[in-house]
Image 1 (cartoon, rainbow, N blue to C red):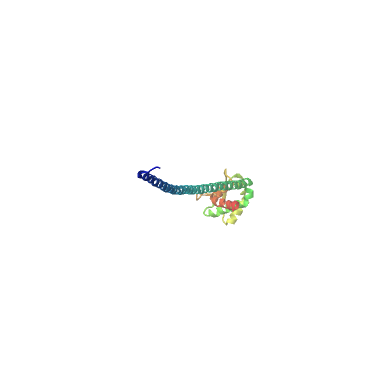
Image 2: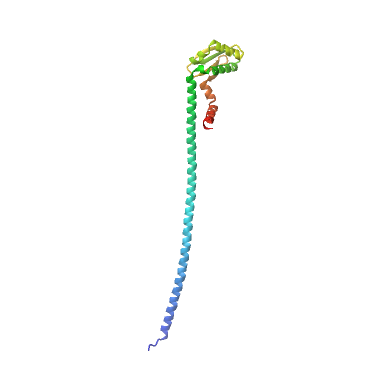
Length: 203
């Protein structure tokens, strides 16, 4: 028969209490660790969501920026193409005027000469400057018809110049030039002509 003294019982009781306390602490620690892990997971998820949201916003802003730049570039390219087409059309039209010769535009030349004769109403002599082909159109009958239509007697003189189609009138007395060359008319009406061509081509 084994006899236990009181110290053994106290030790056993202490061990039981210690083990119980350790289990309790382990439980509490485990719960805190789980809570901390859950909190960390939430924080990590929020950080991840924030990063993704921020990245999404940046990507969207970058996409909009690229779209805007692309649109600007495309519009610029379209304007360049339209400008090139307008220039080609105007160039072809001007070449047609030059190549068809003044006889085809006899009525237009007469109207231009009439207009200049009326504008230079204070002079009795006008110099008609033009290339040889154009001046050949202005025979005596032609010039007499212009005088009659203008309702005044004006003396016309002709001077051959190296120039394109059309005429330039020189009012020597008033030192005034009226540029009715086709190039001159085009330059003075260029914006209007180009706008009309643009409307015809592109609506």
